[in-house]
Image 1: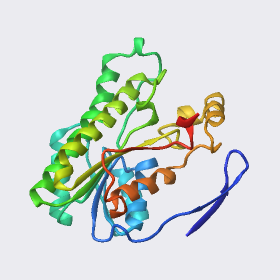
Image 2 (image 1 turned 180 degrees about the horizontal axis):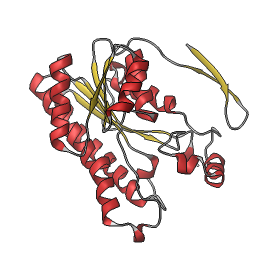
Image 3 (image 1 turned 135 degrees about the horizontal axis):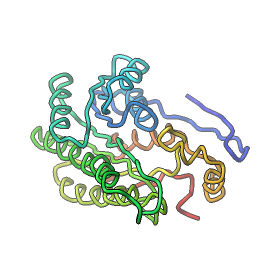
Image 4 (image 1 turned 90 degrees about the vertical axis):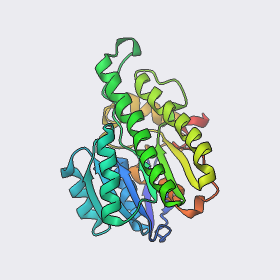
Length: 268
């Protein structure tokens, strides 16, 4: 399926989306799947043949995405920062679909925007609970399931370019994303001998409701465009393609890596 449009710079883009069935027979869990990047990833994995479990705290948004995807989608409410709910998510997935092959950790929060010196502990705790504890809880639960099955699998962690550099005004968020990168590398080293691959995607600025405080600010948006070599803001589908690659056997020899999907932000 082809897609041609015009980006922020006025330069026409021709993007061919791979709609092959690389994930036929696989079962994937995608957290934070009720909108934005998570919904786009879930949709892409289903297009490539996977049965997809959609997870987030509120079931209503998940049901809307599931209706769009169709029979390949199963919505399950889960607060990933709560270990007992994560265990329930895995158990319900296995009971309904028989197994888990792929996990995409995407659920995230960023409740505080401002200097790190002024952050309150409540915002700190919430950010770490969802962005770091939640990722680890899901990764560990899926890894244990795969180890018990003696099965290979793929874990994909959505981090951020802000985990690789200073993140003024988003410092706590950036710290959690740096932690995700470290976790990705260590889990890849520990789980690799069992055939479980662990990788991360580091998006730049993406046009989502989550990032609306940034994309909706003309000054910040222009600053990002000036530094981004492709001269446009990412769309959720730009991240979904990389997630599908890492989930599939096309990435069978890729583990422990963090792939920046940032339009060239980090090369300037």
